[in-house]
Image (cartoon, rainbow, N blue to C red; front, side, top):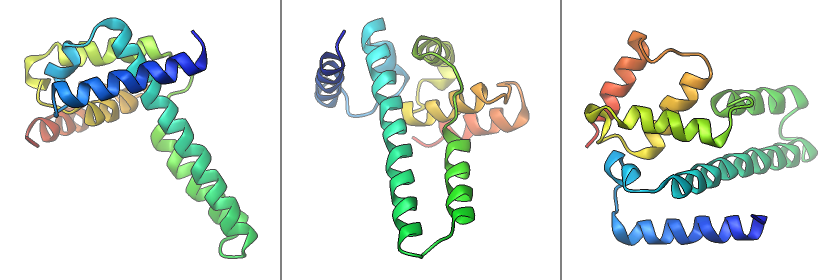
Length: 144
């Protein structure tokens, strides 16, 4: 699939989802077919990657204008990527992790952006069974 087709597909799915359900939670997620889930996650991570590039450009501009130095720019960028690093994890693996988490009825109310946070932390090595992750899940369950 070409990059343009992928972007168009993601936009169509996104637009359709806006009209089908305003809350993107477990119920919404489970209503998507496998391809839609893959497109959604791919689009989400394209946005994260784009955010990385925007931040990198903004930091370079701040350096160029003498507002910050290289050490500060590096520290900010490392902090940012520390939150977004998924290593070599593939989109399909992320979809599977989200499917697994939403298979628990307690997690149905968690919105997809919060579920992505749980998945990223898990990818980064934080076990779902730790107290920290269980508390995070519980806080996300109670947001609605």
